[in-house]
Length: 446
Image (cartoon, rainbow, N blue to C red):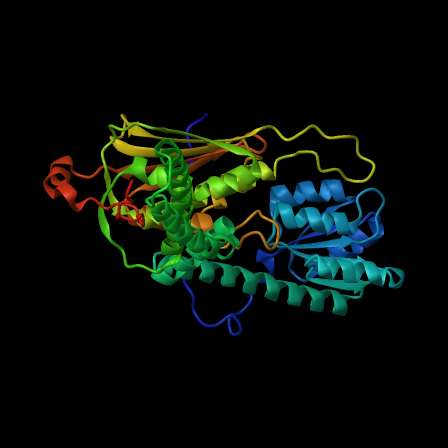
């Protein structure tokens, strides 16, 4: 696997006034791409736009138009909705993927109004009917330019705001609750109450074994069975208690953190989700690596987020889901996540890698994955805060996180954290920060 890509520094953002009172940029700074299969329509529209001071590009079909979109990055795209080959709707959908910030205006005849409405549902900026007159065209352009500038400034402001408050308790807790919901779902309600009753009854049954009229061998076997049941049930109760503890708000507590212990605890919390997805988690942790200085709960949140992302990537890999008329697709490859922690000799940093064999990350998306609210998931499957939260936490711990991936080739996330001063760690002794452990300390007789 090649060296992870470095995340570029966020650009500085300045604001002067509200979105409403900021003037639009001069027209010669706007580039407009016109896609239409009729040469006369393209020529007339280009002349009108250039006379008004805009820069123009034109294409006779969707395929060549999308190539111009990718290479020249125009702010506005005007496309005919009805064209041979690739339709305007398909152009719109692919344009949203290639360059989401570009505003798309569709042109249509009166007979295609329903398609124009569909285009608006797919986030087209506007539609205008043919034949296109200058007044309507320039009115639609003005709205598209305002929308483009407002969305850009809103995105810039959101990014600036998110970078400012990323490490604040509220944002961290919100993302933690999202992780908890995906991890536990209805687990707490479904098993916590029954477990409490089971534990009480098992303790009563253990006491019954102390009564007379029991054969010693039978009593011993019965108590052994009960001890196993109690131990396994106690383990489930600890899992639920751990989930509840994970969900609570807590102040930052920096101290020595054992990475191997952190990984094992995260594995326990994610095990149920991994089993449901039929994904194998392979862990390699060098027990000799030094502790790191940090907040164990926040670092645990980072690991769980990365494991969840790996699970999502594997589940989204091409598999047996078919569209109508398609031949049987090959089964999804066996899901596998590798979690490895060691000491990176070149940097003398503690390194934690989370690697999966999922769908990978497209090259165009890779530089943006740590941006707040950026997500490649479908609606309802994330708001794009997970990786930005991880980035903020690791940065707050004076560490770095990088990603290396290619579409269809899996992904590898690498966290690097400075090791704590070993002499200081030895002096602190029992002051190490442990993961929340809610196991009962009382012993059961027998």
